Image 1 (cartoon, rainbow, N blue to C red):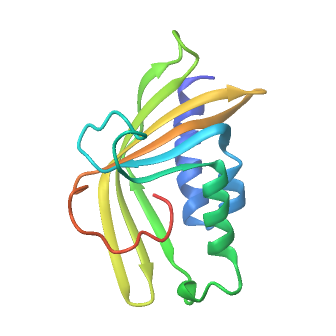
Image 2 (cartoon, rainbow, N blue to C red):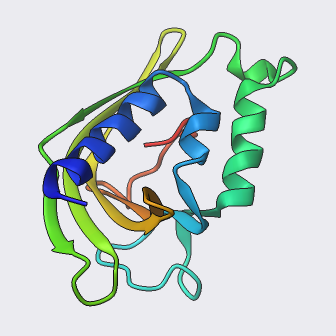
Length: 157
């Protein structure tokens, strides 16, 4: 993989989320992939410390099924999202452990009906190569206002 492949992956992933292509998005995760939103600044442990979210592929799939279900009345009208991101910064090309690491600053908007929520912070991607394709080993979302009270985040940042 080269630098452009990694950067394109991050932008394409965000486009999938904004286009509500949930099933395609879950296929981007490695079997042991995790989606993590820490509760603390510079939090290191998602298991022994509480997190806003720490989900494996099974939990992500359940959330996607809820979002796409016909009987999900909390999603009528459907939530929509928009990711505005800086160019991803490559931190590691996997030289030592085979994990490509990236960090991207973002502004995220989520809307449903007349409700509009905005979040900002940094997305950390840990990507691995599986059968010639990039997969998400971990996607970490560090919100700048992690300690603020939130309404429900319906979609995926």
